[in-house]
Length: 166
Image (cartoon, rainbow, N blue to C red; front, side):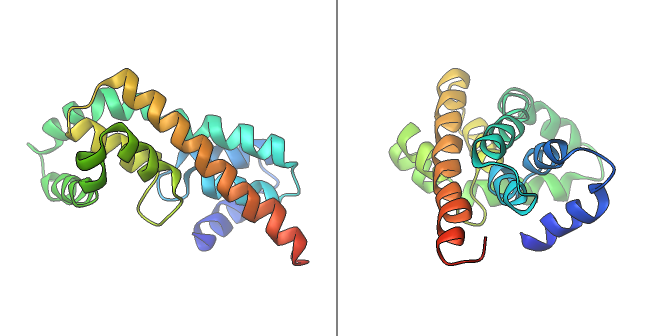
């Protein structure tokens, strides 16, 4: 993830504001809010500012995924991109066990615990593929992103400062 953040910093620094860099990083899958908060830390933004910007950036694409990804995937399966769609569907379904077993609590934990391959994007894809309710999924993912943000903030702004890296 650090190399992705470094890429964004090298491409965007000096071209857009620090806030916009955090926002853009947070929009992307894989890095999401976690990367946005770490980017805000690297740019010397306050915890509150980094958190809010990263939270909004991470949540912005989620309603689109929850509402439209099924239709987008169905269309793309009729094109040469079928293998890519199959890859993402299979990857998401392999990670869906916790959500299938525990429902919305499983979805919350899947999004909240900041591990590789988890997060709002994959959680939204899993929710869509499992046919979960849009409103409940959106609220659950929003809560999970908030919890992930708290966890990452503790490590980024708290622990790093305590051990003298900040």
